[in-house]
Image 1 (tube, rainbow, N blue to C red):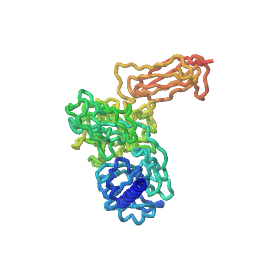
Image 2 (image 1 turned 180 degrees about the vertical axis):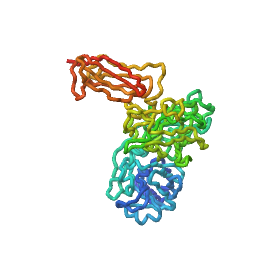
Image 3 (image 1 turned 30 degrees about the vertical axis):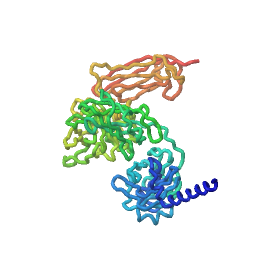
Image 4 (image 1 turned 120 degrees about the vertical axis):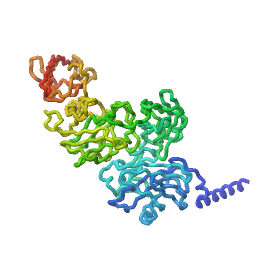
Length: 580
C-alpha cells in the first residue's frame, strides 16, 4: 500500500511536469498584480554604449508561480502588443520583450520574446503597462527622463533599471540608469539591484470635478486597488458624506473615480478627506489626506491676473510667471493658456497651463516655470504644490515684452506689457529680481502698480503673497525688537535678536547700523536693502568681522527712505547678555 502511494505521487508529479512543459496547466494560473514586474526599460538606445540600438523592456517573475505568457499584453496607451507564443516564465526568471526584428540581436543577452506591434517607447516620458490575458493590470510604469538621475546617461544609450522589486510602485525613487559598462543588463540581474524599501505614506495631491456629482482624486503614487475601492475611505464635507461609487483608475491606480448621490453647488469649495487607503507596499495614508474640489467655471476678463514675473533670471536660470485668482470662481487651468505677441502684434507662442485637469481656487497663487527644481534652489518656495512646470514658456525678453492669458475660447483675460524700467530706480542690476504687482485691483498696465521684489524677501516671492503687496493704508510704519535682552549662547533660548518691521507702502530702502554704548558702529545689519511691506531681520551678537561682542547695551539705528523723498528714522535699544 505504501509502495502504491509512492508510485502514484511520482506519477502525478510527472504528469504535472509534463503539463507545465506543455503550458496547459500554467496558462490556467490566474496572475495577480505585481506577480510579474517590468524591471528594465530601454527607450533611448542611441548613441549606443554597448547594447544594440534596439528598444526593449525586461519583465521578471517575482512570484513563486510559473506563468505562461501567451496572450499577455504590453501597451504604451497608443499601441498594444500581444505575446503569441507559449513561453513559461519561471519564478525568479526574466525575459526580454522586443520587436520581432530585434530578437536575433537581443537573444545573445538572455531569453527573448519577439512581438508584432511592439510599442514605440518615447525618450522623454511614457506609460508602459503589462496585462494578463484576463485584462488585469499586473504592473505599470510611468517613466520620464528624470528617472535616469544622470544628465549624461539620459541623453541615450543606457537603460533604466528597477532597484528593488519589493518596491514596485516606487517611481523615480526606485529607478535609475544602469551602471553596467555595456549600458544595461537585459535578461540578467540589474546592476543597480539593492534594498530600497518604500516607507513613505501616499499623499492626496488634488481633486477635480467631472460634473456636479462626480470627481477624481489624484494621489502621488499608485494605491492598493482593493483598498482604494472601499467607499468608506472617502468623505466629502458640506453634508455630501460618502460616495456611492468608488473606482480606482488603471493602469497606474494613482487616481480614484468617485460618484456621489447629491449634487455640488457652483462657486462652493468642498473638501475631500481620504482615510485607510495604502500604497503598493502597505503604507497607509497619513496627514496629507485632504484636498479641495468644486465645480469649475470658465475664466473671463480679470478673473485671473498676472501678479509677478521674472523675465531676466540669472545666467543659468529660468523665467517664471505667477498668476492670482481674484475671482470667486474655481477655474480649470487645463482651459487657460499663456502666450505673447509677435512682431506684428498677433498672439503667438501659445502654451497650455496644464495638460491634465488642475483646479485653481479663489485667492490662490500659481507659478508657471520651466524648471521647478531651479526655482526652489534659488528662491524661497513656501508652497511647492503651487508650482506648475511647463516644457517651455513663451519668450520673455530681458528688457521688455508681453504676457497674455487666454481662456478656452481664445479670449484675452489678462495682458501685461512689462518693461525693465519698472524696476526700483536704485537697483543697478535687475538680473534675478522679479517684478511684483502691488495691488490686484489696480490696472495691470499701470507702471506705478509694479516694483521690484524686496531684497529682504530674496528678490522674489513665487507662489505666495508679494513682498510689495499693498498694505492697509491706515497702518503706520513700525520697527520693533524682541527680545529686549538676548543671549547668543546657542542654548535655544533667546539666542537671536529679532527685528520686525512694517512699512506703509512699497519702495522703501533701509540702512540699519548697530552701535555700542559709546556710539561706535559695530555691525551694519543692512546696507541699502529694499524692504518688503513687512518682514524681519536677525542679529546674532557678532560684529562685522564675525567676532563676539561684549555684553552690554546696544542701539539699533534704522533709517528708511524712498524715491519720493520720504524718510524716517528709528532707534531701538537691546541688551546683549551671556551666561557665566
